[in-house]
Image 1 (cartoon, helix red, strand yellow):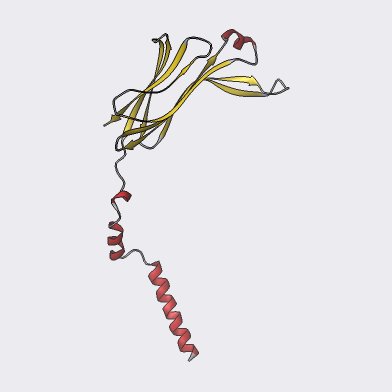
Image 2 (cartoon, rainbow, N blue to C red; image 1 turned 135 degrees about the vertical axis):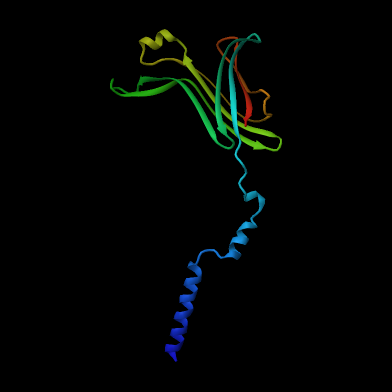
Amino acid sequence: MNRQIGARLGKFLLIAVFCWCVPFSGAQEQEAAKKPAEQVQKPVNAYRLDFSVNEMEDGKKINSRQYSMYLKANDYSEIKIGTRVPVEAGAGKDVFQYVDVGTSIRGKVEERENGLLLDINCDTSRFADPERAKTSSIPLLRQVRISGSTVASVGKPIVIGSADDPDSKRQYQLEVTATRLK
């Protein structure tokens, strides 16, 4: 009697393992096709972000630098341009740490019903005293950082942020325009 129960149990386990290992049946494929619309992947749109880093004095634009990046919706992209400057990092003259001097812009675009959500970070640095940078292992740097997250319309420029220079009457402004690519 125990042998019959053991044989039946063995057949049952063999059938259960076989059913578990068999690929999807037609009914399972039909069930998978009924997934909600949110889970269906939408086409990905691409954008160009045009940046303008403006230097203003008394309300007049005295300098402007232009940057552009291409990116997919929901992805980050980055522009980095400048110089890596070695600076002595310790008591020994052979130990250096590198400092980035220049411009770094990081951006992300997310599509929303009411426009585009832009997440932007911009760092601009330069030597405060270029002559000292040539002769000293400890250069003085000026830095402006503007970061922001806002909703923008396609094709319309928007100011992400601005900052006054504490040592002059100048103001720095970061403007961006998003264009959808076809």
